[in-house]
Length: 405
Picture (cartoon, helix red, strand yellow):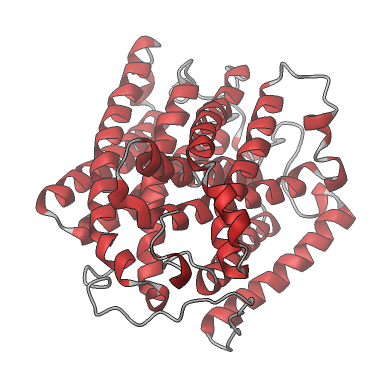
């Protein structure tokens, strides 16, 4: 997280040329650890699909949604919001100085949504029936149908937005030109779809007012989920960029390194404003529902920890970091905010859900459940690293230096 990570002299990037040059994996700590986690994940996958949910989870009729929904779906979708926030900032609002952050953000979002769909297979089962709700559903008024349709369409949009990098890698210039002409249309479509399904994920919990604690249950849950996705996406772009500068610095060109400070400062400033508004909105929700009395309970103290500790505090750090132009502060605020999004989604889907049940009947994820989630995240890291190393994600392809995509 060093402030000077990006300031060092750029290492000469070995640009990828048409012809599918592929990075050869080396035996190092990353390879050994990720390889072991993937092998464990494969074993857990076999157990889940041969033995059913009961073989690997603590789910039951009272707790049908566990960590695979709370973390893999709700957190995954929120943290993948950097795709629509970054592309909208660059292509719709004209902040071209953020251009170098678009491809990494789109890649992170594409992998995030792809892994969300992948993770759903574990929770739903019968992978071959996953397309059924989209193409053969009779329940088109269901929120789950709307979420599934939007995620399906937005994943398609993200795939198309990602393809220019892959097309440059394989040298298909004419297809790339066609895709680039759709950039603005795809960005607008992506923002619309994100607005719909980010908010709809919150609306899913509106049907369970008796199960979700009043401090987290609100008619404004769809708004809370959408607004929080915006600063989650901005923070994730900063966080992902920090890791990329630390571990993939040799794949970055001078343009990417030059624009890095501006991306961190600009996104940090935007996140601070949005988080301040979100903080006020949360207390407006408490006031409108007259839930002040709950703040004196154990759940109330945890609610205040979430709001002050994971919203107000990182928002203040963001603001101070931008004011002082302290990149280290902003990057730590980004990490803090990402953790805060995880805390919020866990609170809504797990901690404050079924809050009235006795402790013995409450859900807590099993070790295999956690192992599957770690496996999915590991797959995402490995795929991201492969693509970032081989394709023009963190640098411009030498054959397209005069173009912006």
